[in-house]
Amino acid sequence: QVQLVESGGGLVQAGGSLRLSCAASGRTSSTSFMAWFRQAPGKEREFVAAIRWSTGFTWYVDSVKGRFTISRDNAKNTMSLQMNNLKPEDTAVYYCAATEKTSIVVATASQYGYWGQGTQVTVSS
Image (cartoon, rainbow, N blue to C red; front, side, top):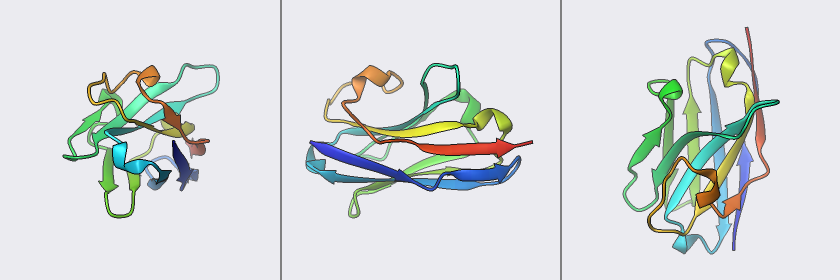
């Protein structure tokens, strides 16, 4: 089992920045991929970014490329999402996810077996 706890959400004006963190505990040695998803009211959960734990290779949804950066600290078992130039359309609950599967489609939520409780990000215009 892996437990995930997000932090760092909040309210920010458009153009501002926030940094989300996800602390992993438990059987983290088996983690292969971690990711951020988000869900806005009335919308489906959407992939934001993912990182391969061993190599640090990253993936992003097109709408956040150049603005968001995903990173991980293997020693601390934490993953972060630096979000710059935030837009009102980035408003959502952001979820941290992890999987032990070694070959996945990173943007597919069902590939991840572990989820955090979510943290609210609100961007005002």
